[in-house]
Length: 435
Ligand code: ADP
Ligand code: ZN
Image (cartoon, rainbow, N blue to C red; front, side):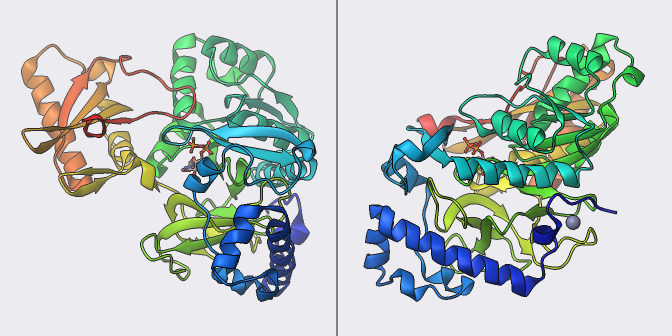
């Protein structure tokens, strides 16, 4: 049976949820219209006023907001309150140029910690747990976001931040950590380091992983669960909307619940902006229904997923999205074919000879796209014999081709040569962008 942090909201009947969303949408639209000039100008250009928003469905009348808007109005052009009411800021690296800066009021921070507490509770955690937060602390939302959520449920919170892996393991062992929060790629690195450390696994109490901030596949989940001997849950978030905790998996692990009383989700066709029905894949869009500092209306995340509003077996009625495996920013178009690093990850997790550590390099030579993947071979399979490595190269290339549709050039590399990630893993370099 599931545990809830806020049962009233998490299991709210649809009609009641829609009424709450309507009330909050009206309020937030009113707020941005009167307090934030860029929103007012856009709404005026679209010929709408707050009076046109009478139901949550009227959200479709409102213009979208994009990452570009956050850059164009950098740093404070999209604030809806005076800076004196902002108690904290975070920033996202974005893909290019200027960072995206977000300001939170005291209530925004409290809502974020509420959303985070719902996640941790769904993972079965409570005040008796010891939560080690190995997401980076700082401008990145991961560390402080998970920290506030852990404190909110009253757990013993260890703010190790990312890095210093030996010390992470020492504290994990000595302080009896029961839940680990970090990126899945760092979890894999910690698992590897634990295996080498000589610390007996039965002296480690970790049972739950709180993993997110980057795409990770079911195959990677199995790999980490097996190697760390834990249950690994997805947590989703993004700086612009708040940070980790916008979405979370329940024990059913067949989708990521969204705290839709705070963050209203829509799926759109990224080409036309048309809202798509449940089950159809498209770009995820969020409206912050309760935010004061920097409310965002119909913010386009560039994350690709689909949504379902069916009641979940866990009892929650909160909408669920499918795992985000594709972020338009990560998509590589190679010889006309769309390739996502997560597809490569999924394949490598199924091959016994290699570690899921890889790096993709794409370039253009003589007008043809090249697609190279460095893949780390396991100690016991790594050989000096050319013929052995050639066989392995072909096997990996075929396996990847059967999933992505084009054949990569595999470059097997020695164990422990690919740089390990302590935060969000960087898995590809597209040299064509620099030409
Ligand atoms: P940046 O854009 O610099 O990466 P953020 O830290 O705000 O900044 O990252 C948010 C993004 O990270 C999301 O939009 C999504 O692409 C990715 N992300 C976060 N959590 C997950 C998750 N659980 N699964 C897949 N992708 C995730
Ligand atoms: Zn559920």
